Amino acid sequence: MLAADQLGAERIIALSCHEPRQKLAAQYGAIHIVTERGDEGVARIKELTDGLAAHSVIEAVGTQESMMQSIRSTRPGGHVGVSPTACSSPVRSCPSPTCTCTTVRHRCAVSCLS
Image (cartoon, rainbow, N blue to C red):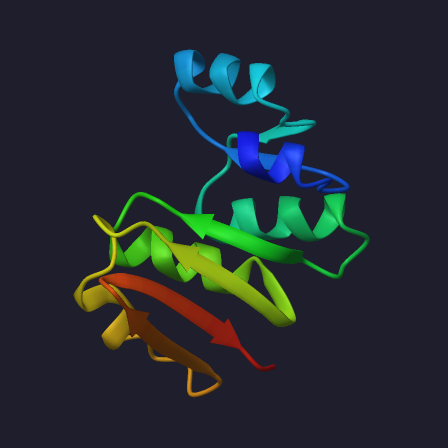
């Protein structure tokens, strides 16, 4: 979040259900905090981005549910960055045929094409 802010991200949206993490997110540049998960979380992100979804998403949890929410919250042509600790089987088992995973030096990047 801090890097996104310093690199000039237009808007930072954080997803968290945990109040201490929400406070940290706000301190590090988050403009919006989304507490919803799953379909509701994706809908809220699309609402905040005028239906476009996010250009870039960082997935740091590592569950199948959080990975799918990240992918579904990303606009066509967008990117999902995956924390090295979260890059495991959820990416490789992604049911979306429009997403590809590239692993370089134990870091995973998912590109969603449509």
